[in-house]
Image (cartoon, rainbow, N blue to C red; front, top):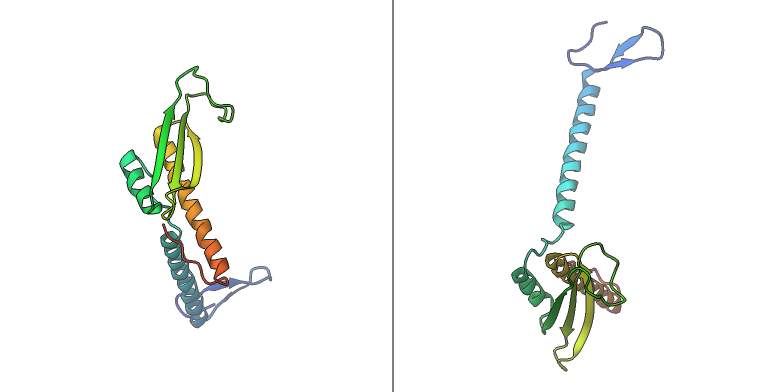
Length: 160
């Protein structure tokens, strides 16, 4: 059983029989595998770049900057910290740790009135700030979807 060096061995269904594939077929298979690997890497890089999560807000200064961009006509937030055993509002989620309540509002440009008013609950101030930013980003995405639907379903532009 001699064949071209580097040929791919193909096992047959017959006992003990093996046939060596020609080197051209081996080359085609190797090139196809390399192309699929390269394509997989490119797709992975594209997905990572286009579906990258926004960086989390870690302190009040980042929250101030990000919310300033997301709410160009103004916003306001109020944080309430509840200590152990403190009475919390009836709509507060059950928790084994003291809660942080963050109420935030977004203002309108023309009337300076409140457009959005929300309340989030979290175990820490940092998590509450992050939830506020995520709420606003979700609102912005929904606004873009509504605008695209109103414009006749044109292509959406995702921003982070």
